[in-house]
Length: 221
Length: 221
Image 1 (cartoon, rainbow over the protein chains, first blue to last red):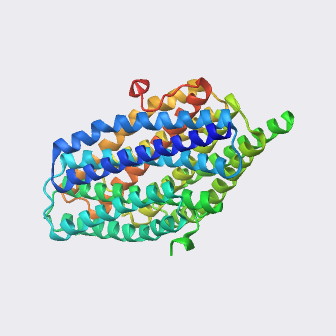
Image 2: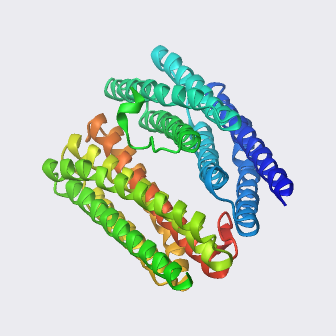
Image 3: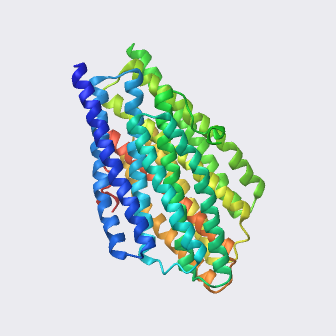
C-alpha cells in the first residue's frame, strides 16, 4: 500500500510538471504574439487553452481519488493540498495567456521606444518567475520559492511604469485609445501571472516549512 | 466521532458563510466608493482586507486539520475540497475589492451619462451573482448555482460596453487618460469578480452533482 501511495504521489508530481510546462509554453507564446504582432501565434495560444483546462480536471480528479483512497496525513496531505492549489493557479495563468493573446490580436504596432523596452523586460521577468515557481515546487526548494516572492515587487514597478507610459502616450495622442487600453491590459495580465507565480511559491514555502507566508508583506522584502 | 465530525463540518460551513459576508460587504463598499467618489470609504475597504486574509488562513488551517484528523471520503471529501477552493476564490474577490477601491481613490468624476448607467448596473449584477453563488453553496443548491453561470454572459457584455465607451471618450478627449484607464480597470475587476462567483457556483454544481461543469461553455447558454 505504502509503495503504491508513493507511486501515485510521484505520478501526481509528474502530471503537475507537465501542466506547468504546457502553461509556461503558452505564456511564452502569448508574449511572442505581442512582441512579434503575430496573430496566428495568438490564435494558437487561444486554441490550446482547452488542453490546459482538460489537464486541470484530470489532475483535480486524481487528487480527489488520492485523498479518498489513501487518506494521507501530515506532510503528504499538505503536499497534495498544495498540488490542488497550484493546479488551480496554473489553469488561471493559462487564462491570462489567452487574455494576452486576445489583446495581441487587436494590438496595433507598439510605437514607443520605452514601451518597446518595458514590455519584453516585464515578459522576461514574469516568465522566469513562473519557471522558478514551478521548479521550486518540483524540487520542494523554499529558497528558490522565496526568490520568486522577492521578484514580484519588480513586476509591480514595471507594470506601473507601463501604465504611466500608456497614459502619457494617450495624452500626447501618439497612441490611439484602443492600443493604449490593450497595452495596459497586457501589462496587467503579466502582473497577474507574476502574482499567481508568487502564490505557487508561497504554497511551496507553506508546504516545506508548514507555516503561512501569504499575506505577510514583510516576507517580500 | 461521527457526531464530532458533523459538528466540525457545520463549523467550517459557518466560517465560510462569515468569510462570504465580509467579502460581499467589501465588494459593496468598494462599488459605493466608486459611485459616490468617496475616498474614505475606499480606504476602509483597503484596510479591512487584512481581516479577509486572516479569515482565509484560519479556514485553510481548519480544512487541513479536518482532512488529517477525520479522513473523510466521498461526498464529505468533495464538500471539504469545494470549501478549500471557495475560500481561495473569496479571498481573491476581496483582492478585487481592494483594486476597485484603489481605482476609486484616483478616479475623477464620471462625466458620461452612459457610463453612469453602465457601471452601477454592472456592479448590481456582480453583487447579486456573488450573493447567489455564496447562497448556492450554503444551501447546496445546483439550480441557484446554474443561474449564476447564466448571468456571467451579461457581465461580459456590460464589460465590453464599458470598455467601448471608454475608448470613445478617450478618442473624443472628453475624458482624461487617467480616468479612462481607471474606469476600464474598475470594469475589468468587476468582470473578474463575476468570474470568481461563477467559479464558486461551478464548485457547488461539481459538489452536488459530482460532475465537472468547468470549461464546458455549453452549460453557460
